[in-house]
Length: 138
Ligand code: CMP
Image (cartoon, rainbow, N blue to C red; front, side, top):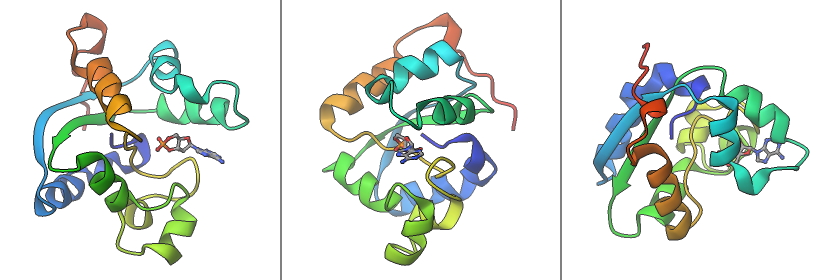
C-alpha cells in the first residue's frame, strides 16, 4: 500500500514494483474512513502511535496493490526497508522508505508481514465492498 505521503510518487513506485519482478494483480485507490483504517491496522490498536497512524492514513488517498511474486511478502518488505524512514536512509538507502518516506509515521509504503496478513489485507481492499470503490484524485 502506497500511503498518503508518497501518493505523488506512485508512478516511480509502480516502476520499481515491475523492475523488481512483481506482477500487480489488483490495484485500487481509496480514501480510508477511520473505521476502515482501524480495521486494517487492528493489530496495532492501543499502541502509543495508533492515533497518529489513524490520522495520517486517513488524511488522503492510498494506493492498494496486490502483488504476486515468488516469496512476495519477504521481497516486498526488503524493498520497503526499515519502518522508520530516517533509519532506512542510513541502513537501506535505496529502499522505498528511504527514498520516499519521512519518519516513523510518514514512511511511504506498507507491506504485509506474513502470508496470512497478506490474505487478510488483500481481502480487505479487493473483496467486493461498495464503500471501497475507487476515489482516485491524483
Ligand atoms: P506499516 O508497515 O504500515 O505498519 C504499521 C505502521 O505503524 C508502520 O508502517 C508505521 O507507519 C506505524 N508505526 C510503527 N511503529 C511506529 C512508531 N514507533 N511510531 C510511529 N508510527 C509507527
